[in-house]
Image (tube, rainbow, N blue to C red; front, side, top):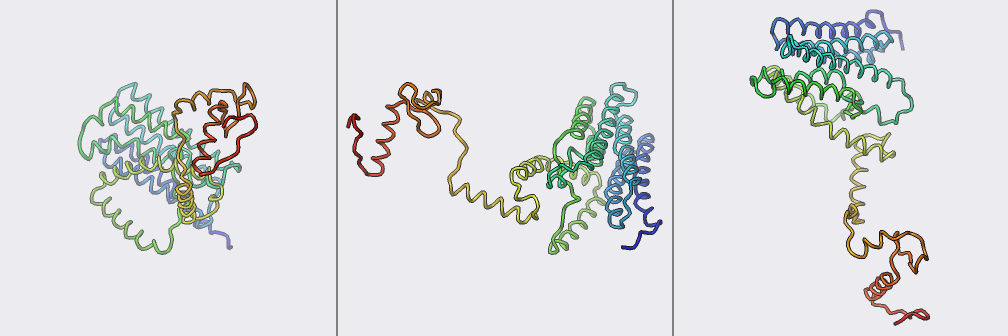
Length: 330
């Protein structure tokens, strides 16, 4: 492959710098009380942040400097800028609000530091690349502004009160540094037959963003929060099925359906939580064969009389009769 021209290698870094400038511009818009432009600037920064890495990989223009610049840009655009926007909007002059803003900015930086550390971890399972550890920085920078989005769309309410904004900011900060898995769209592959419908969907989303930008942004953030339980369940399923690590999603669905059919055929059900009567007393007995005249029946020990009764019932169900053992009553 021919080496990439210097001007082309500069393009991804230029996009990263533009994302940082958009984030800083959001602070300036907030200082002039133009919160809609502040939200738009951070949203533009998120879009640019999602493009710079992909363009760098497509152009074979990745570099160590670009990776470091990307982390610095994310810290400014999605950590410092949203924290200052929230402080100007709801906590201006409040010391407690400043502390909350600092906590959020610090959590963003810690999240980015952990992300850079995990890039060099070679002991992760193959399916780990499909997930982020915690909420990524662009999503966190937008999620923390959800109360501001709602206030600009439907007005003030309980969602704009200081206690609610404080709790929400701390909760988003906790999601940033948590170990909760979230889906990564970097590994999503679109089948050829879905390209045309996807382009139509992109057009509809663009129309919604242009016509109702705040409502579309709020809906996107709510949907993103709703996908977290699915991501947790998917990661747990992959951890329990190593045979599905290196196969496409279509074959994974076939494996999941096959496991479901097998479980239904075998009649597998979760174990009962309550054990009544003699069974409960039998479970409490020590599991040693031959102690105090006890006999082992399956995984537990039953008294001799209970074991004899169960065996007789099994013989009667099959319609057979057996000869009693020596010294055993008929």
